[in-house]
Image (cartoon, rainbow over all chains, first blue to last red; front, side, top):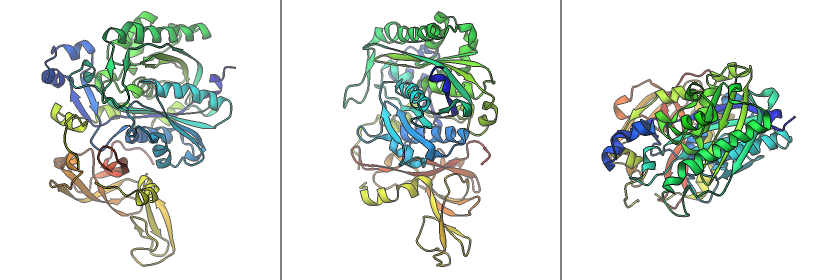
Amino acid sequence: MNPEEKTGILGWGSYIPRWRLPLPDIARVWGFNPKEPEELNVFEKSVAGVDEDSVTMGWEAARNALKRAGIDPREIGAVWFGTESKPYAVKPSATIIAEALGITPDTMATDWEFACRAASEALRVSIGVVASGMVKYALIIGSDTAQANPGDVLEFTASSAATALIVGPREEAAAYFEASYTYVTDTPDFWRRAHAHYPLHGEAFTGEPAYFHHITNAVKGLFEKTGLKPDDFDYAIFHQPNGTFPLRVGRTLGFPKEKITPGLVTPYIGNSYNSSALIGLSKVLDEAKPGQRILLAPFGSGAGSDAYSIVVTENIVSRREKGVEVSDYLQRKHLIDYALYAKHRGLIDRIKG
Amino acid sequence: MKISIPPTWRTRIDRYRLRATRCKDCGRTGYPPSEVCRFCGSKNIETVELIDEKARLVTWTVIYSAMEGFEERRPVIIGVLETLNHKARILAPLTDILPEELRSGMEMEPVLRRIGEEGDSGLINYGIAYRPVLKKVEQ
């Protein structure tokens, strides 16, 4: 038995801020081709409020996951927070969430860094520590208020959202893991130096040598390890930097569009970085039926990708209603303009009291 | 704004989980928590957490002349809420809502937010704000 098969997802949950910026407003302000949003297949992006950050968003996603898992928070032995938008450069975000949820002090808690796949690495490690019996439950959170240099093409998609998963024993799971595989290399596609406000990216590197190469190889690695093939999966969820890459990588691997679109959230909220693929999983878990198999393949720049095979159990039915669904958050929205977005994201230079 | 570390640290769990004091003699719940019942003076009290409890908006004020450090949050909306089960009265910032959307009696729920921060380099103060109930979920 793989370590993966001893574990599963007990609870899942997401959070999307109420505020949305229509992408045509970015094109208007910065003089981009008005067709850019259509070419990206992204139409609005979620924007965190002035009183929100990756910690507050992660807290709400984790509350949804905890309600669904129905466990005592004190039994959680690891709180692992994946982000590239930490409120503090030094001082863990994980401890704030762990304390607020009543998980402290008998737990591990730390922040993970690997661009957009920090939370996914934490997820894969959580399988190991749960399968070994080292901890009973682990709380994994992917949360970002993604930064982009104003006027950079990344600004179209860099958005805010969070997703949390509670990993525990398979017997208690709403969906169990079958297998997982990770593929990483040193690839300079996207980075942010210490003290830099915004990330930079190697224009020609973000697609082929980074996103497509790593996801394709992670998924092929999973297929080789398990003997599974695209036909065996009911859903496929890939990292979603825009609304076209996941469809293209899916096509390359042999997944029809119909298996990808249920988990494709980016067209409505943009790329929420560490929550990008995970919010796709969250949305699929909101609708999947027992027995269905899900492929999950997050990606992070720098670069790496993980592929997971996940099978839904009977427990999913009763747990779904216990938390707020991704579609509820998608429906709760209020459009703002570029000026208000600039204030929300701290893009306006001012002397602070 | 200056954030003092000791009281911020001492009250963190009270703030994060919205702790209040329920009096076992008169049955009323007071917020914030106190050593004695604020209604009858009894010391026969217990701590309750109101973080899972929805509340009704009783009244509010919209502040356009916000104090230094709150310029980004203007207009600042402060509400008085009454929790549905314990009937505790809570004074808290309201969030995810525009002034024209406010309605007396509307159902709201507590969420963890950044309540204040000391410039770009100092501490961030996390605490509870109330927002309109997002979806009715059985408690």
